[in-house]
Length: 423
Image (tube, rainbow, N blue to C red):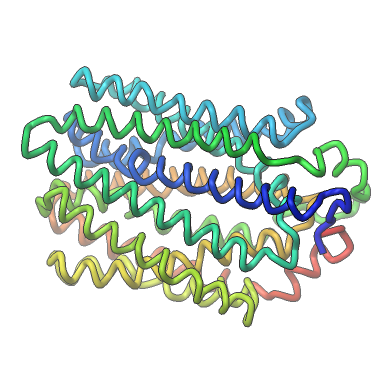
C-alpha cells in the first residue's frame, strides 16, 4: 500500500484530490482548444500537410531531452510541487506566441517549431515529478475509482474545449476571420493552463523528494537495469504502441481537412465522437479494471487497438468515421486508464519518477520516429488519397508487431518486480 501520512486530515486529502481534478480539467481545456488545433493552425498559415503533421510531433524530441533533466532539477529544488508548477506555467506561456502569430496573420516555420518545442518540453518535464507527487496524494484504496473519475472529467473537458473551438473556427471561416479565431483559442488555452497552476498551488506535498529518497532502500549493485526487468518489457511495449500509432496519427488532420475537404464542423464531429466515447466509457472501464486488474485491461485494450487505422481505408463518409471513432475512443480510454494504473500498481514510489522519466523519454523518441517515418512515406507517395491509405495500412501492420510484447506482460511479474519496495 502507498505510504499515507497520518498527519494528513481527511479534509486535506479531499482538498488535494479536488484540486488535482481541477488541474486536470484546466489541462484538458488547453488540449481541447489549443494542442489539438496546432496542426490545423499550421495548415491555415500555409504549411503543407506533411509539415503540418510534423510540427505537432517533431518538437517532442526537444521535450524528451529536457524532461530527462527533470530529476536533477527536482533534487536541486527539493520539491516535486514547485517544479511541476514552474513547468506548467512555462507551458501556458508557450501558447502565447502562437496567439500572436495567428493575430498577425503569419507564422515563421522555425518559430512555430520552437514555440511548440517549448510547449512539449515544459509539459513533459513536469510528468515524472507529477507522477511521483500524485502517488503520495491519492490513497491506494481510492486509486482506481479516483483516476477513472479524473480521466472521465478530463476527457469531458477536452471534448468541451474541442467542440467550442471547432464551432468558433467554423464561424470564423464563414466570416473570413479564421486566423483571428485561432488567436483567441490559443489565449483561452493559455489561460486554462495558468488556471492549472493555481490549482496545483492548492495541493499539499506530504512527501517531498528528499523524504522519499531518505526512506527508500539503497539499490544494490546487482539490481537489474530497468529495461531488463519486467517493467522494462512494459516500457518497450508502450513505446512500440506509440511508434505505431504516431506513424499515422499526425496525418489524420491533414487527411480530413486537406485531402477529403471536411469542414471544421465535420472535423470536429469526427474527433469529438472519440472524446465523447472516451469520457462515457471510463466509469465502466474503471469497474472492469477493479475486477480484472490493470495489466489484463491493458492487454484487452492493446488487442482492440491493432486494427483501428485499417477502418479509415474503408470509407471517407463522415457517418462511418463517427462509428469508427466510437470504437477508437473506447479502446484508447481503456489503454490510457490501464497504463496510468499499471504505473501505480507495478512501480514503487522510490522508482516511479525514474521509470516515468524513462517512459516519457522513450515515448518522445517513439513519437518522433513514428511521425517522421510516416511523413517520409506520405511525402514520397505524393500526399494523395492512395498515399494516405498506404500510410494507414502500414500503421496497422506496425501495431500488429506489438502483439508479442503485449502477450509477455503478466500481472504477477510486474508487481513482483517491485514487491520488496514500499508502494
